[in-house]
Length: 372
Image 1 (tube, helix red, strand yellow):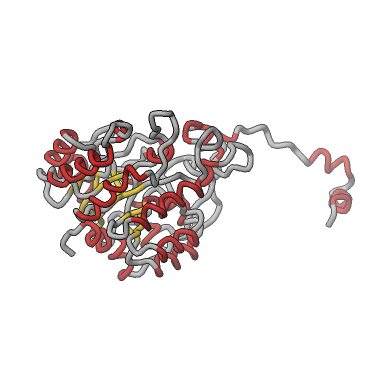
Image 2 (tube, rainbow, N blue to C red):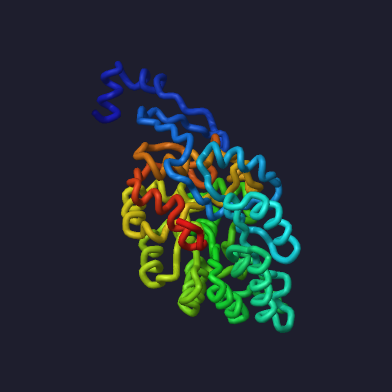
C-alpha cells in the first residue's frame, strides 16, 4: 500500500497530516535504546575452569591491594592475574615483593622497557641488560605498550619505529631467558580514520580525541602491523603474545595469516570481546583452529582500571565468561549504559570444554612456564 492509498484508507490526506508527528530532537549521547528482544540470558558467576588473566594492570592508579583482588579472584575462579605493567628497577622489585612473593601463584609481574633512555648512547645493550636484571628480580615477561610506534620519539623528534634495530638485543634476550613478550602494537582501525559520521567509534573518539592517530606524522595501522611482523620474523626463538587479538580483531583473516606465518606468535583477547562477539561464527572458527594459541586476558583488573571504558570492576569478567561459555544472543559487551566502543551488542560462541580449558589456563601456563 503506497502513501496515497494509506491516506485514503484513513479518510483522506488531512487525517494523515494530523497522524504523522515528528520525533523530538535527541542528542546521540542521550540515546540509550532498550532491546525488545526476548532471548536467553545465562548468568555466569564464575568461570567453568580456573582462569589465568595474562593481561591486567594492578599497579596503575587507582591501586588495588592484594586482599581486594583476591576476594574477587576467589569469587570468579581466577587462579592468577598477570600484572603486565610492573615497571623496572626498584619499581619492579617492589611489585614482585608485594604481589608475587607475598601470594605465590596468584600474581605474576612483567617488566617494561625504559623508553626514556632510548636516545642514550649504548641503549641497545642497556635495555638488554635491564631485561636480564628484571629476570633476576622476578619478572616473568616483558610488556611493550603501544608507546612504541606511536609515542616514543628519537632525539630529532621522529617517532621510533617498532622494528628499530636498537631493540633487537632486547627481543633476543627475552628469547634466551624464556620471557614471553606481551606486545601491543597499533590500536582499533577506527582510531586511524577521520572522526566523522562514517567512523563507527565516533562517540568514543569524540569523548577521547587524544586517542585518535589520524593524520599528523602517525604511521598507518598497516605500517605498524608490518613492522611488528618484521620483528617477530627476525626473532623466531622469542615468544610474542600479541595483545588484543593480534591488534586486528576487525580482520580475523589477517590475524590468522600472521599466526600461520609465525609459530612463535600467540594472541590474547583483552578488550576485544566487543569485536569478537559481533562476528560469532567467524570467532568460533578462529577459536577452533587456533585453540592452542589463544590466551585469556581482559586489559583490566577485578577492581576497575583508570581508562574510562574499563571502570567496570569484576562485572567485566562475567561478560567474558558468558561470551566464551554460552551461546546467548545480543547482550552487552560492557557493563555500561552506553556501549563504550561502538553501538552494537554481541553473541556468545559456546566453546566446548576442551577449548575452554586451553583458553582459560592451559595455553597461558605453557607460555609462562607454569605447572599444567
